[in-house]
Length: 262
Image (tube, rainbow, N blue to C red; front, side):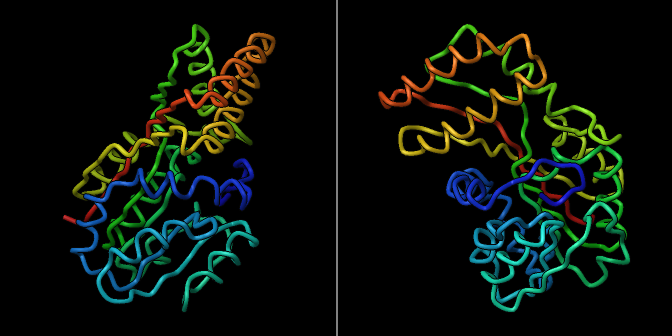
C-alpha cells in the first residue's frame, strides 16, 4: 500500500478486485473530470495502475501521468503498464501544494479509508493550494449486505468497522468515515464537492473475489473481537456452502468524491 503502517496489498489481490472496482467507480464523476481536460494527472497510492487503466480512456487527449506509491514493486508494475508515466516513491502523506504545482488532477482509489483525518485535510489543502481537482474513488462506507442473511452479519460488520477505525502506529484510521470527512475537508478548503455511491455488487460471476473479501472481512472482525472466533469459523463455512451453490451475493458500500476548485 501507499501509506506507512497500512496493510500490505498484493498484486494478486489488486488484480482480482480490478474488474469490480471498474464496475463500481462513478462513471458520472469520471465524465465530469473528462470535461476538465486535465493535462497532468497524479495518481496517488497507484497500486498496479488500475485507476489509470480505468480513467485514461475517459479523458480527452493524452495527459501526462505521474504515479505515486510507497511500495516499489507495485509502483514499478504501474509504471511498466502506463506508457510515458513517471513513477514517484515515498509517503504520499507528505505531499503539499508545492509538490502538486502544475498538476491538473489528483486521483486515488481505495485509499482515503487508510488515512487519518489530518492526512486527508493535508491532501485537501495541497490540492486547493495547487488549484487542482481531485477524484478520490472507492472509499468504504461500512454498508455491507450479504445474501442470504445470517444472524452473525451485524456483529461481524460492527467489529470490522471498528477494526477499520483502529489506531496503527499512532495514526487513527478513518475507515468508513473517510468519505464524509474528505468531502468536508475539501469544502472547507474552498473546493466544490460532489459525491456518488460506488458499491461493489458481487454475485456468482465474482465468486472468487467475494470469497477472498469475505475471508478478509471475517479475519479483520475477529482480530478486533477475538470472542467472535469460534462462531466466525462456522459462519465462514455457511457462507462457503452458499458460494459453492451460486447463491452468495455481496454488496460492499463505497463512495467516490470529486472536488473541483471553485
